[in-house]
Length: 240
Image 1 (tube, rainbow, N blue to C red):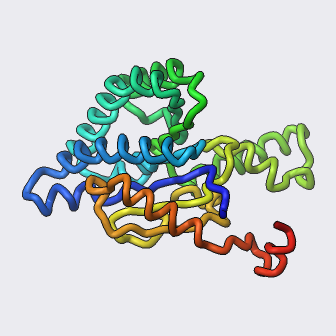
Image 2 (tube, rainbow, N blue to C red; image 1 turned 180 degrees about the horizontal axis):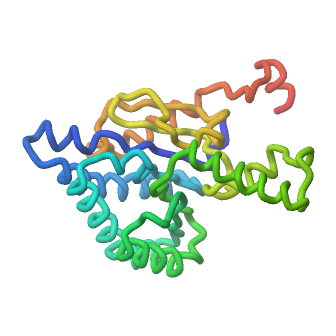
């Protein structure tokens, strides 16, 4: 059976869920918080060590200002209401992406949640906030270029390991499985470096409707995959 250490989810479909029900779009984001709780519970049940959720992309700033404001208000509410429960369940919460553009109140709640849950060892719940893989690449390249210009490193010393250490998403196991909801079939600038050999699973459900059984189906599908990592099936079998 394929080892499953890290699951990442592109939580898509909140707005459409609300629109289909004649509700304002922010109602979909509100309902999506319950799906986050269900996915977290399912990850713990499957003894997965890392769960990464695409909470807010760098492109999401293009949405109407009112929707963005409400989205961050809901995020702050989630952080403040869930921190104690996360501590009790042994779940560590952290975020990656840009922090310089986050509202001050959201950043304060995030820092508090990160500090309070730091000791959690059952599951590492990671939120991608104001995140975009292309920006992540550029910032990593700039960091290495500055050091090379100062003579701290030589250009020939730059390899995959060194580059990966400069990525804002941190050095954690790459996602074994990436789930995207709502039926869309693209990565949308999410973990492009880390997803090089990730298995992809596309769920037709809109994110607020995503249930634990949908998580289970994705895990079951993943278990049946033949992971080759660029090799042949025979080579993988021999290596195993």
